[in-house]
Image 1: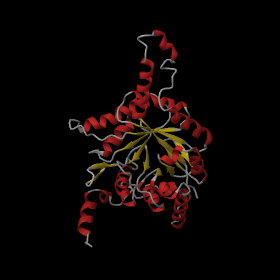
Image 2: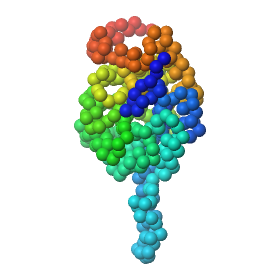
Image 3: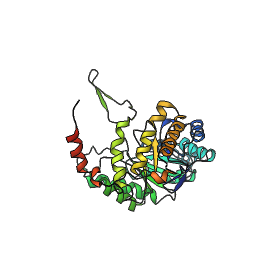
Image 4: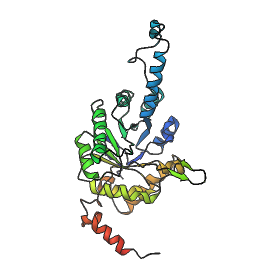
Length: 331
């Protein structure tokens, strides 16, 4: 059985990727993920706020007492020599890249195209095989237009692309007014892959204490439907690789995402629920499904239920909407 696939220019032994999570901050977990069959790992994100906080801390330290003693400047290394920022993250990238035979993909999380983007180069130099841009941005500024939001994604990607030669993926929000147009624009701007979709962690309200709750809810299988729709729409119509994420709890979701056209399937919630060894269960389920239907490879079944290859492409559009509403029987 040939499970190999290609994602963002990287040759992978199968389509299962461990997406960014706290599990992946531990080298022991990363090694175990490789041992049980994971094809690639995405490290937890390095956040723009972390980098800015460390830069501010350095600026504060170098400014202390410098007016009263100019020689104090010599006590600190020059900014170019001082590795400002979370050195531990770069160390994790370095150690993971040296210890694992599977690709290690780093992750940068931010909302602007400011100085934090320079860390993309440091991440490349630390040995990352690729970089995922997690642009977690909620446009709460009411003056921002849809074009402004889209342009922000493009500006960040272009800034990073100008700094690194490793493959770059962009983790997309599902809330653009025209996801397909944004996908094509990111492709033209140099993206090697798109990850569908960024799962926003919406707050809840405690009505007794009148507090905002920020608890984490792991994804559920029914959340697969939105990324499944857009994977099916984009498959075969964009040149970039497509990664599916959200809602993977069993091999069924892995199969569905691949049928829709995903090149890889990423999961975090399933591993947090069941542990890193659960990758082997997902792989076994995928292999069993392929054998039962006499598919010789993942490539053979990928995208056969996408919009481009569907007998009725409108099944992914308005016709499907009407059919679902009219076919609901209640209960």
